[in-house]
Length: 210
Image (cartoon, rainbow, N blue to C red; front, side):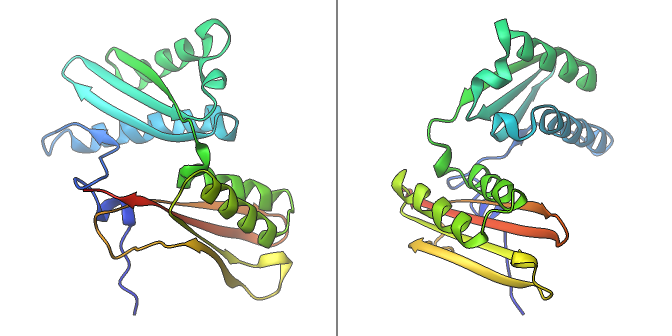
């Protein structure tokens, strides 16, 4: 039986970092975690795939919460005259109940981030584009952007088949057992009309850290 572990959590403190940075006692932990989840859900629902959001980092201090949104389309998040950021700030403060600061970080090469690549492939599948074409074009774009290796797996009723199956595309090397390897990972879901859900997993190897 396979013993699988998430490539991100396996590398925490080595070359990855936590998405939420705060400490709470046993009494407050559930409430603060619920607030974090609510903020991430709100940002995802509001901006969705339009803004190509890679990650949302949350950092708490006693009287302020900093929310950093890494996105490939900063203009969509900021909005006209900064109206989008102001609206986000008000909604985030309402959820947390204390003052908040919203920072926007622009992602320069979206092809090097597993979340953006996986969601892009999922959207292509939802638009009925061939799964092989979507996988090959996604992997090729990632390698052109400067990755050392990429692995893409999709599973489900591919092409509307009666039986589900798994297909993969691997280019370059992806050393999953090397802990110092900088590997980005994400899984996304494509809601395929008439065939249910198709899962998409992406691993991107960006080189070794010292």
